[in-house]
Image (cartoon, rainbow, N blue to C red; front, side):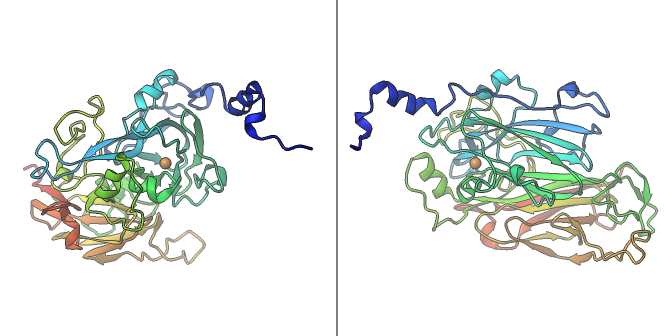
Amino acid sequence: MKHRRIWQIPLGAALILLFGAMPAFAVVRMQCPATLLTDGAGPGGVRLDNVTGFPTGETDNASVVCIHIAAGDGFVNMADKLTFPNGGRSQYIFSFSNVTGVPDNEVMMTGMLAANFSAPTITVKQGQDLYLTLTNVGMAMRPDIFDPHSVHYHGFSQAAPIFDGVPETSVAAFPGASFTYYYKNVDPGTYLWHCHVEATEHMQMGMLGNLYVTPVQDGTTIADPDGSGRSHSLFAYNDVDGSTGYDVAYPLQIVGFDSDFHEKHIAVQPLPFAAMKDDYPMFNGRGYPDTTITGPMPPPVDNDGVEVNGGVPSQNVSALIQAVQGQKILLRISSLSTTSFHNIEVLGIPMTVVGKDARLLRGPSPDGGVTPGINLFYGANSINLGGGQSAEVILDTQNVAPGTYFVYARELNDLNNKDERFGGMMTEIRIAAPAP
Ligand SMILES: [Cu+2]
């Protein structure tokens, strides 16, 4: 039989071959158990605003939580405002935005160019079912890249392969497509979430977020075992004895940008993977002093100060830590650095490490679970985390004078916002005096 070349196939057949394999159009569809689609319905209901940009420590009591996120591109500003006085150097990013509650037919427009860095913080309660719908809204600034995106719930030990987000063994959402992940949150702890497609590139570009699961012990009042007379109703883990009790919690995610990588990306140039080295070290997507801004940062601008995404704030996760003297602070520290290990120090307040990689530091129970095992907590001046690791650290401010303290990377080259010194991976802990 004579071989036919592609241009010898009749035009109609070629068009069918070309377009027949693609869906005629994509439909955004947020999947959430249909009988539960009422907002704020309490136990058994669904609250649609569970993704917050802020570490409130609040979670919903509903047994089912539905969240809708969009994956796409956008912009953020770095903290080097001496060099770039119009708002800090502009950086092109890929990331996620919260479109929970946005009508399905408006998700593409709402999510486009609205990517957040850090990605929205996801907080769920132990035992909750999470339906997480991901819609890929495409790259508005790089339409030549038709990359899929996924969600990897890092550290989640019950991951079903189909919901694990690793593209080789799972699925990912192409532009215009939606995919709903399901997670049963069995184990409390500090996790991390990120896109796993072309992970080095997409993670360096910003597809990273805080994620944690609060324990069912929350809400029970337990006296602090230190004998100080304090009691707590919020805990890092189901510790039984209250030894992980805290008053205020803050997630701090170690991240960084290589500005050269980001600039070559928006300039459509070959990407310098082998030379990747972060020159903007950050906590929660901000360099110091931007880390201390409460609430969202102003909407991103280009290097001339012109708004670049229609005025939507894109850096919504503050890294400022605040407490009243006598309170216990829980730091949920995680690293999604794509280039380096980082050693994080708290100056002037002893650090007690109570959990590591979403596990309570505790030995086995001597009697099959009736009596808690021995705590393996340890005191530290600093902790060292590589990409993908997390730790829960409690800071007891009982004997700490009111004032400002610092959390920072001990690698001094990380205390820069590129060419400007005295910034980077650092934030403040502000301890207020108790009310008289
Ligand atoms: Cu991605």
